Image (cartoon, rainbow, N blue to C red; front, side, top):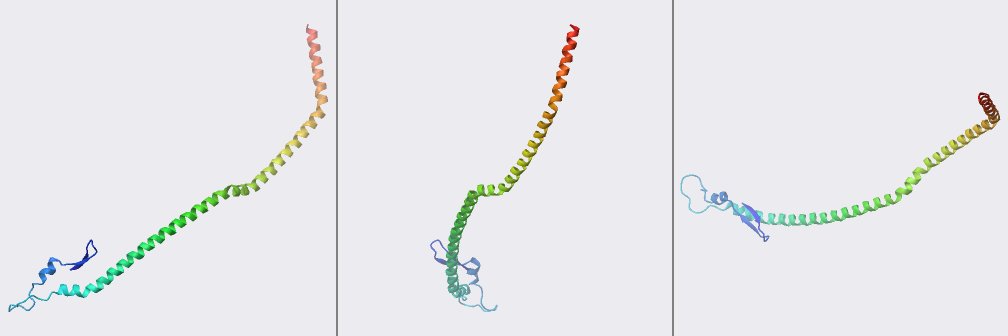
Length: 159
């Protein structure tokens, strides 16, 4: 035997076939026939349990109400957290270029300093090459002129 809640919200007592047939079992010891119907134990149990079960139904409705309220509150918290996360991401994206520049500044300064040192070394090397060229130029010019004169002198002898 159990209580069943219908679509309208009313509870009805559902009696199984076994419980129904149990009402007609003999109540006494074997022997003399007993007249009358035995006491309906299932109905007595239902009557005894009905107030407790009604209280449980109220508790179940209250629990359902609390769960629904908790679900609504959880949804509000999730939406708030999602909004906060979006704000944090937007702020981080807005700060990212400045942070990149700040992070790159020491590397850039080091690179500029190294480039300046390389440029200065290159200018010193070029200056040394120009100085050597100035020192060697008269001798090279004299040798080239001499070679050219010899070459023209030889070609004049052949003609």
